[in-house]
Image (tube, rainbow, N blue to C red; front, side, top):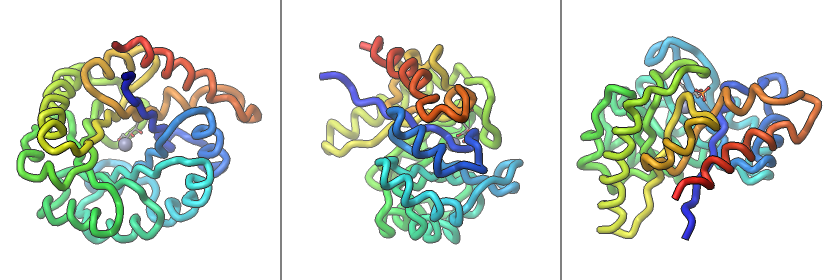
Length: 236
Ligand code: DX5
Ligand code: ZN
């Protein structure tokens, strides 16, 4: 059986003046998740988009079958989680360092009808998972320090992915419940196969996708998404 791989374009690198069209074009080119990066100029040194924008893209994402994957780089998280659930988020992930009560924040996401997940910065150990596996639907490993698109993939992430894969596989074997393993930062057609081999099943890509093609071409993302899929197809 071949593995299911999901591609999550990070709209941070999209053209915000045409966001709805960008989402339509990129999901229609064969991607799966709309990766939605929320930054607060406090937890990370940058400021991006909030629930209002999530609400604005909700219908388009739904129509084209894109799952809205909200990555919160904000501190604290609890105040803003309900706003994103209401604004159409399907998955909400946050950084454990940004929540005083991780178990409670995870449960809150689930109670609001979304899938929940924890995000690990490059230097953050995976042990935050140990006592909350049952409340996690997605584990997201940062392969860059959060705050900006277009950074270089940190190779140590490959070792960390293998560790996370082992933990998740053991959990899935014991419970039968699936947990997605996502990687975020510096992913491109050259390194995606190696990253998949290390254990990731869901791949965020911002710069690699949105810098491609001419804006007037509705199919401009087909080539790069085809390349990413072709690299993934080489993984045994
Ligand atoms: C970084 C964000 C990423 C980033 C990915 O803080 O969480 O989602 O935008 O972009 P690329 O693929 O350009 O590294
Ligand atoms: Zn992200």
